Length: 237
Image (cartoon, rainbow, N blue to C red; front, side):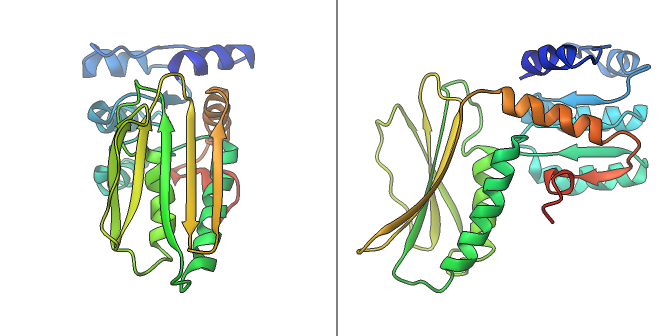
């Protein structure tokens, strides 16, 4: 993603003033942020929170697409407020995916109380995808759990190239995380009954949509303070 964002940013007339390397310590990190307008952060769950705090400390707005760190969200928001910083985060920067999030929430509202239907989810990514379920799948699951009140949480099963079977408890939303070579990202939600089924699906064709969304967020964040998401940018709430 970093390389894709760099390529697209240069094409759009932006300049890349610094690239943070994995081996950079705090001093090197902060030095590289000198004269930077905004930082775009796609790293790993293990390093993301420290990266955010370095940017807050340097007074540099940060746009992050890293997933898997949300257990620390309250801490990050508190630090952002304390340091009067600027933070934009998203589990997925694709405009289409964020519209899909809203469609998913609305469908879950309609399906609440329809006891004949069970709901499940499958997300498919490339073999190098580190987290399972994906951050996008967790956001979709949250939208379902807000409205399907008989579900008490979600249960995840990872399978490689469709080789493993999946089972779950009836009060948990089943999420199958499939890892196959060369898949950019697909998310599918299905409501099944004995008579029919309803399916909504989003399929990403390339990473360009994610890079474009991150740059859109970075431009939109100029001059803003506080914490924002794609719902704010796209005026979906």
